[in-house]
Length: 213
Image: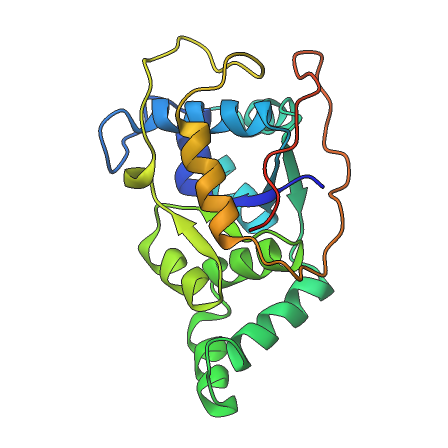
């Protein structure tokens, strides 16, 4: 079964625009390394549609060109905030965050169900147990909902590459990624194998990422 992880705009913006500023030194290289290693290990990286909107707006160039660049990666799967995700978010607000109905109504009304909450619900309903994000509020909500949040500062670094490879040698970041996913993977997951993602000629077959702990 392919391991699924979520990703947010703070990572994807650095992938689309390596010159963008990050919260840590060499942030873009860290993101490139992460994507390469997750691809090598045949993981599925979920991009919720609210994340897609944010990263396309911040891409700095042509929106269509940025979208086509994302579609070129076999590891990415775009997933909508649909009825399943909406139900999941309602459950999260009422359940895992231990909110009362009154508190949940306040959150929904005050924030109009903020993007970060939609992102977490999409990632969670599609079976991921880890989300890569450098947004403090999103990470906090994700952790309240039982997800493992991985910030840029948590990622190791390998030498800068001029271009992101989709196949190649696996670096040390893979060990960290495996450990993070394994520690968060639930043994009684109700979710099955991931659907096939977009295909590219550059992306080859890779071994499975890691089984749940």
